[in-house]
Image (cartoon, rainbow over all chains, first blue to last red):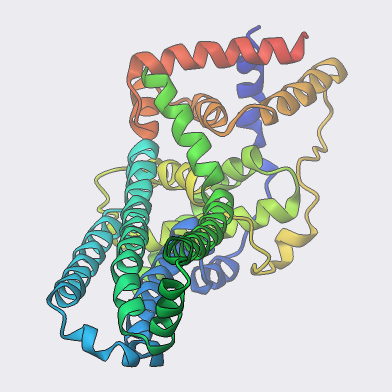
Length: 213
Length: 164
């Protein structure tokens, strides 16, 4: 006899062996909170949006920026600000639309695709912010060097001692190292959080995709 | 939420709860995990219930949500409703007399099924529940041909696990 036929025969008999969960127990269960990955993805995604919004507002409100108050009137800076808020609104809208399409009554593959699509939107938003961060730093650094009093003194000293190249190179190096560390910490955090959260989903999704090849 | 909706849902689930138990049986290895998954499937079924129009059978609708929860949404959780009957039952123990050889074979078969991956388990589950390939393909989102091909591979894999 086919192995699965033997199993099926037993499977049918099993109807009697499961514990019976009472009406009240089921009722209590529907009042309890879900711990599904969709709920966690939603929470983490909202936190990510809030985090980047906070970074953006935080930088504006910081004393450092007050020193560079003149920069707020700079056309390039204003354009970047408007553009980044427009992009935030766009990504948040897309995230919301994708999130709403997640439906547990869809077939398994569609459900997985919709969850991954929602996740991808937030990932793209984070990637966008990292790019803006790098461009912003590259754009702000020369401005800061030219407008900050202590930087100007250092620059004059470097000029006088003929070490201008060394001065610029060390600033560029420190900035790059700072950015690399910040981005690495962020990516490590992502890799850990989503690696754990989406491990099973990714594995099962690739298994289904593999079938279609 | 509407009380009558709650009542009709709980009544229906109480009646068809074995489907949820069977999904839990395939996807978990101990009673705590079984209870955990049972609760999560119940929550997901309840969340989806307002959209259940009755054009499909409640049980058919349950298969889809139950499997989706097990293979996609489920995360192990420590918070769970403790249920009296649920906690005290040592399930999977049968009192009726049985054929020793067949029982041994079944034990090995269940053990082998537990070694399959999530998607293979889903195929086995739907097969054991007498679903045809059309229903299997619609539940998993793959073509009927691929469902057949995969099922044959699963059978082969089971044979290999049983006779290494």
